[in-house]
Length: 184
Image (cartoon, rainbow, N blue to C red; front, side, top):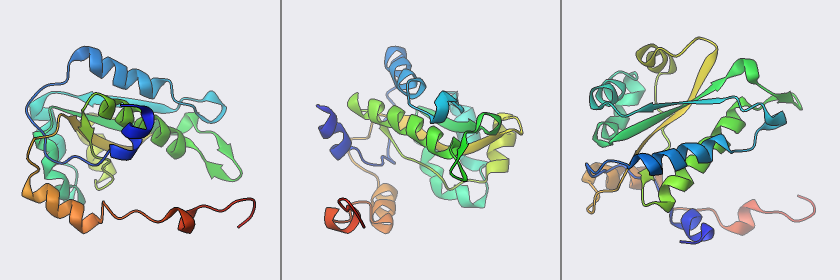
């Protein structure tokens, strides 16, 4: 796939096969995150790779009431938790960039994964304090997002279809509604 094919075909995956991710591919996914740009090259991101099935289950069921919608996480062979070191934050234009920087890095990882046929799903529905406690994340770090990673099941599950429909995942705004040239 060329890069545009990767970007245009990537979608949130919520049904995973039990096939594990080869270590050499995981290494490339993680390296893609490491190489991401960041404000003043602060590289504030930190990632926790969770490949222990019991730990993934614990993360699934101990991420707060809001996190219960992510119960499909338990099917994934791997989860990655994206964190940001707020002490390495770059603040410009009255804006904190640790969220932006970590998001860029995590997105590069997701696109790299997709280039190998490995799906992911950006998760923001979780209780940050519960996730931090579960994974022993130090106080100065923020949990920005987490995602399962794995090869998609050949047949998408009913829950996955329902959530995608509810979220309107296939509905994209028209270019004319979001892009302006030279001025607003």
